[in-house]
Image (tube, rainbow, N blue to C red; front, side):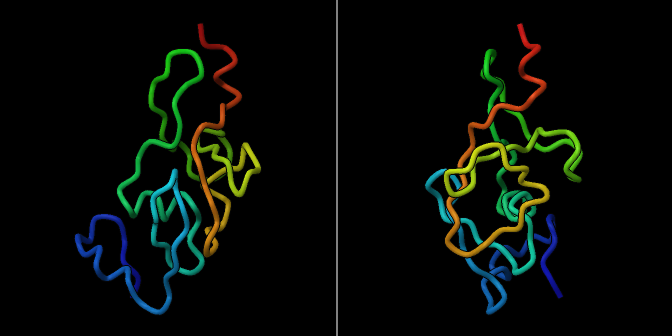
Length: 106
């Protein structure tokens, strides 16, 4: 049985079905088959980027690949949606991508 957000047992994440990847220089543990967003949320990370002009924190919104709020850079490739991109062992994920909606900020 997998660990879900809110189970309160993060130590259960360490088993043979897990691996790690880098998030802004920190090691994050993920379950095999998890998305980047799922692994980040399970690890307590809620802010994925900041807005371009105001610098306000942004987190996930839809979680199904429609809204572009969860854009991240994966292995040097910008503007990847964390909610639909599979987490993989050893990948390097960083925040900082600018969502399309930011173009209208004043």
